[in-house]
Amino acid sequence: MLLLEEKFTVYPKNEKTNMSFPFEVAEEAKALKFTFSYSPKVLTDNERAKRLIEENIKNDAGEYADEYPSWQEFLPLKNLITLSVDDPFTYRGCAHRQAEHMEHIISESFASPGFNKGKVQSGQWKAVLNLHGIVTEKVDCHLKIEAGDFLE
Image (spheres, rainbow, N blue to C red):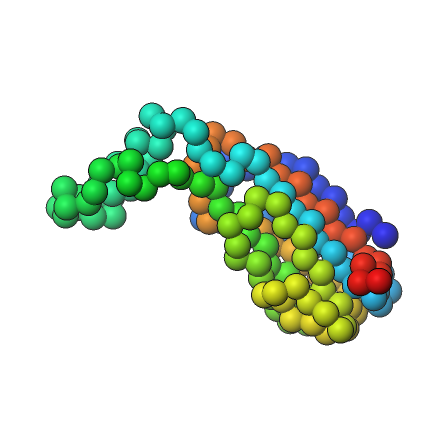
């Protein structure tokens, strides 16, 4: 059963923010499946990459910026968006991985790495996307949350 499906775009101005997606589990379910993908993963524009890297080194290193290696040493720059989940009562875990496509399952007997297994109770749950780094001009995202029996 489809509980939530969202397609949206994020931009560099959204970097270092969280996007919350509340969804309702109407009745106790066997399992929840979270499918999330985003694109592009890698920044291919070297001029943009050079500018971003040099700006960040200057801002972060200040007077020590000249001690850093060449900007090319930091390539490739990648977008990074991760997923966290809360059930109606507590934090259920996170998937802070580099993949641009991920699928995670939470059930009473099984949970994908990074998540806590436990009863899939009815009530308001929340999927949170953590926008750690947005280096391309835009990132297209797709989040899908389903309830069902995904372990058979």
